[in-house]
Amino acid sequence: MAIPETMKTYLLTGFGGFENLSYREDIAVPFPESNEVLIKVEACGVNNTDIWTRLGSYGGSFDDSNQSGWRGGAFHFPRIQGADIVGCVVAMGDNVNGELLGKRVIVNPTLYEGEGDSALFNAGIIGSECDGGFAEYVTVPATTALPINSPLSSAELSTFMVSYLTAEHMLNRSALKAGDHILITGASGGVGSALLQLAKRRDTQVSCVIGKGKENFALNLGADTVYTRDEIADLNDESVDVIADVVGGQQASALLDNLVFGGRFVIAGAISGPEAKIDWRKVYLKHLTILGSTMGTPQEAQDLTNYIEAEEIKPLLHATYALKELVKAQQAFMEKRFLGKLAIIP
Image 1 (cartoon, rainbow, N blue to C red):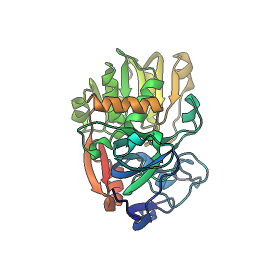
Image 2 (cartoon, rainbow, N blue to C red):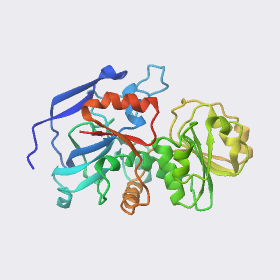
Image 3 (cartoon, rainbow, N blue to C red):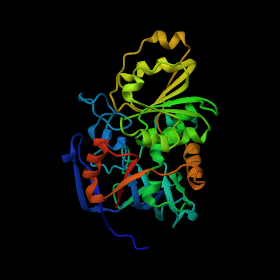
Image 4 (tube, rainbow, N blue to C red):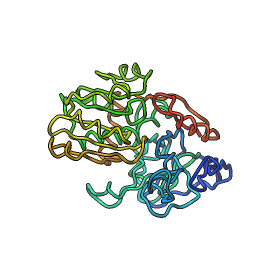
């Protein structure tokens, strides 16, 4: 296919508000270097990562001046955001398997640093450490472009990788197994609903914490028990083997009361705030394990692709927006009045 010289995109020009997002139609289409592929973007999901990166919040709390991207340290502007990329490979650099050309792919947005298990520890993410998919074209490492054979639309496919990769890694970190009882917070969001589906796939008992009025959403996804945020504050049944938390904030300490002796608490988000006051006696007297988790491994990304192809998990696409409506999409995302995921269609 003929590849144009320029493309439409949204540039992030600085940390802060929506005024730092600039729609452009004259940005050069990137050229795939060695070990890279060029993808014509068909859809790109919207995530918390986009918001936090725009705000510079990975360097510290929301109200301080220690701003940075995903990895911390220097951040290079302008940057094209967007990590949940689905599209067609239209060109390749050197040292790339020619079979990828023309294939529809779903992108693992993790930029691994080094080899082996530790490669995830200092990893970056597409849309932060390099340009992402809020554009008509994007280059990515060829190893992150996973061919996908599915009847789902590209918009539906763009709801998966960031949230479900995060969720699958959380469940693996916590060693969740069949028969375990897991409590999931934020179950109406992207990672929370992914945790719910992936935990049910493992044949576990699933309890969820969700906003009032959204209970049926979790029940329809297979949750066994649903609590509102007010109800969970008074719960203390000590029957939970694993807590998977994407909310953070001050609720975390009270959640620990629900864990069995030897229980595991895994966290991969802090949308309610980056700090909590914990009574460490709860941790050591009950032999609890507290785990941090973010993104996932190459094998977990391939596993997710296999789950999608086998229709073992389903997309939860709430709405799509044109590329020119990116600000509107981020505003809707921050209002949290939707269920599932939002996607940008270039």
